[in-house]
Amino acid sequence: MNKQKWAVGITGASGAIYGVRVVQELLRAGHIVHLMITEAGWQVFRDELDWHTDDREALLQEKLQQDFSGELHYWGLRDFNCPAASGSYRCDGMIVVPCSMGTVSGIAHGASGNLLERVADVMIKEGRRLVIVPRETPLNAIQLENMLKLSRLGVKILPAMPGYYQKPQTMDDLINFVVGKTLDAIDVPHSLFRRWGE
Image (cartoon, rainbow, N blue to C red; front, top):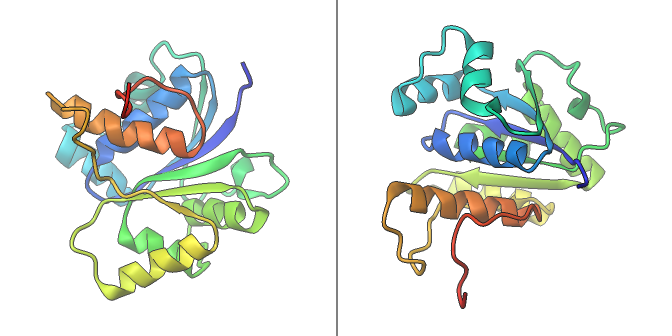
């Protein structure tokens, strides 16, 4: 198997479980994951998943690493030693899931105000894959313009909108659909949902 290198950002938008599952699936597939989590992202872990985040490294080891064959590397938002912060590092791409509108704005305007935004900026400047999974509703004109700007730069905008044609029976079915579509966007094989026509 070709071990790929992926950057994953998890922000403070609702839907932290999407980011968790994406990381787990990439690690399950044996890939290298460079993970960045905003402070608001950690708060959503507490609020939505009831995770105790006092010992962050131990929590990530327990919840994400498990027995998967991939490699997980966690980076603080001020640690620019992360290899993916440089265009010379051959990162296969980046997923920001879920992606807050504040992070969308920072990426769209090239702010590079933290490591997550810097890595996204590198993906754009190097012409590598960048997938943004926004989880917000309704959307105002500023947010739509920011996403349009990113789309015109080649960024894949993949809203967290589950499909229902596979007749979901559980919350996991809905989550797996969004996670599966996210993995489809970076060409990582999975069997998380039944495809149309199957």
